[in-house]
Image (tube, rainbow, N blue to C red; front, side):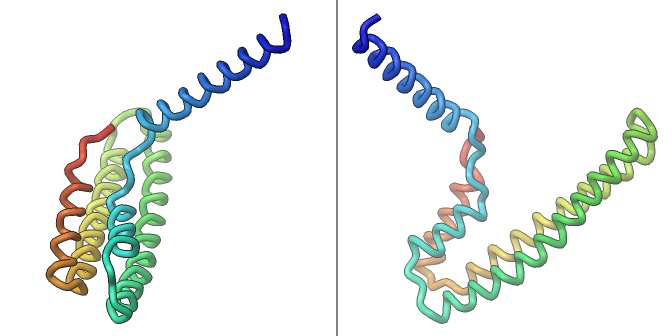
Amino acid sequence: MTARRYIVVALVAFAAALAAVLIARFWFAPPPRVESEVHALLHQRLTLDAVQEQRIHALEVAFAERRERLETEMRADNQRLAAAIEAEHGYGPKVGEAVDRTHHVMGQLQKETLQHIFAMRAVLRPDQAAQFDAAIVRALTQPAR
């Protein structure tokens, strides 16, 4: 094989690998989380004044603490669920209780996330709130990939 063929083969292999990565990212990457899209909207697309920035920052700090607390609870619940599965080897009462507890904490996180979203919305002007609402609806209704 000549050097030219090796170069062509290397380029084709590189192009195929690159295409595979791009296809995998498109098809298998999870959609962005709603809060990621909201954060991008607030800090990149809406023109917030200094007071709005300060108020939203305070809301984000407080919510991050609450979210971390609930996520810690969910990790503990997952450990309890694993222990219940290991003990019962099936869907027994301990597994059912662990699942119910996990669902309760997940529901609490969802409620607190919505309260946080509405608290941030309350900081916005009407024109900003309309864009915010549209972004929330888009984020919640986009089809799963």
